[in-house]
Image (cartoon, rainbow, N blue to C red):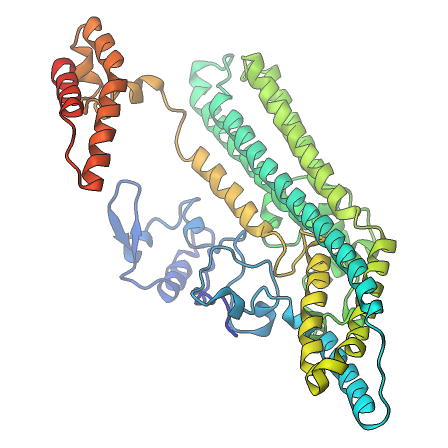
Length: 514
């Protein structure tokens, strides 16, 4: 068996000290962490080495270059903790055939059930062959087979429906985050009532306000991830810096109940972890343990973050910085969409398949598997043992997969990669904020704006020298010229000559218009 492959561990991030008297320590730390010949890309396309960065690291933004990404999935290795925990990194590529892969397979959780089935089948076969025959009519297998097939089909379809619904909600979250981030960054204007001498300070303040609002959008996604995994505090690496300035119940609980908060960061012991990987129910911890043992009110951190986003939107609207009513509506609608995602994901999490169905399907499936040797012994003889184990792997595998993906927000290998979704939102907020609001005249009137591509490669300035009638004529002939060009490409790809009509149409159109 083979794994999907694991990435090499990255060097630890350098610890960053405040500027001033600690500059020497910072430089020494960087020299130990970053090779002196490593080139860093500058926005202007030039490369600088680590020695050049030493002099710039004291700036407020420099530590981000060397800080580990808190939203990324932890580096993986061949350690058993990484091998059987998830969610699986979907960006990794494996060249192994899919039927040989172990990472993501349900087989580890089937080891003990299959061992029990093998022991039972061996005992039954030995008694039947060496002591007294134990044969049951095949009618029982037929009846149970129909019921088991129906139950497993229902179990699998409902589990995958919940999995797909969870993915749809996170896609909706990404969409709403993009829209809301664009409203805050592009549509929120400057205050009009600021005196000229204070305009620069006001612009700087507004810039930092926008960045704070974008950070809150990221904080909502990360807080939702932790809430869906019953991690109610704010001491986690990926959220502590995003909400440390907010007055929330989770922040107060983390500060006042540090013992319980730190307990959520501890890993289980080796024996307990292995037992959990093997699916031993007695070893599985209550996922809501941290919530139940809380000594302070925990509140609802994602909902509280939405309150801060709504208050910021109110200030934008009341101060006239969102002057267009449609922009205000768009902002409020996307905040409501985030609230809908919060409620919807909690509904998926807290509404599992009714326990009566789960118990009945599990019992019927196990009865069917345990009865299999009675039906197979007469024809398969000693081959009954491996045949029963193979059949049990197929049947129980479907049952266990349904159980694993029923909650798509957990830490199982096949659960949704929520860390990747949060990292995507954080990266997209950075992309939105990386450039000022574009002025349409700058990019429309660019020489690189080929307005009639592929009919013409000429840019905006050249077409501005042409009369309007010529431009209108080119637009009318663009369809025919594009069609002729496509036909010529198809003929060249197939190795056949271009028709005279097609060649004449293309050449006449382009020569006569462009």
